Length: 297
Image 1 (cartoon, rainbow, N blue to C red):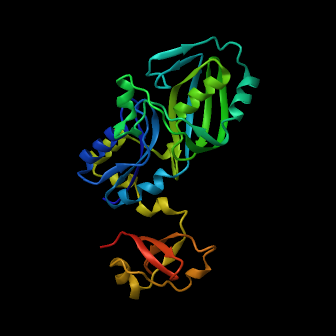
Image 2: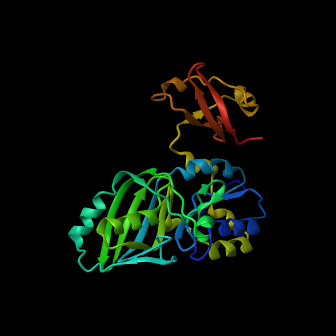
Image 3: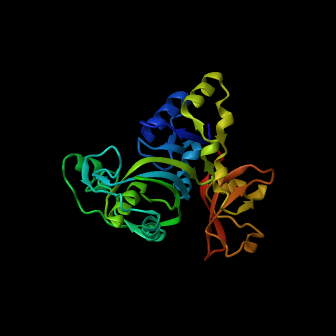
């Protein structure tokens, strides 16, 4: 059971709840998700099973795309519709020109303050637990990148945005900060993750449909290979003569790898017959490759 499921997370369910459901359905102990979605949010949630849990870091760092509904004129302590209202103002003076002008400052490389209601930790405690106890602490600014921020529709007081962004971007913070920039306050009303790396919403399987597939025994058709999320890494073929050394964690020489542009830090390793073997890291001082992650026994 080594592979990745592209699940369309339902609303009112935590990301860990989806993981627990997949564990129960599959019987696989090693299950993890790549990139938390808030309970109210829906959309693409990649869930890794078996050895695929070892590539979660590559998925978590992938570019993500969201469709966000932002309601102007009201702000909350959670920055979304689930929280306590902390501010109200009349947004009737906001027009498309003011919206576009405000959105411009959130494109490119920006800094965000994570919400208090988040899973980040302060002194070993999740921030949301402190927030529920009425405690507010300073949160360090996060450097994130918004590659694309498009205004899809404007039906006052709700603006619908499409956001393509880097790892660590809080769409709730983006909504809150937009409200502050406009002077009328704002909260995230609805959120759908439409893409995470190679996984798109159009190909995501709803959890109920996946449960039915497990009952019918054909769920494996939804399982993506482990190396499907590593396509940004160059591929190298290892000679049969050194596969044993690779499996044993020994550094190996790969003739011809010097042709790789710039000699990247990591690469995918395959056997001559096309089996995915694992991930290699290049050691510049030695000119050798070190087995970073081995996926064969």
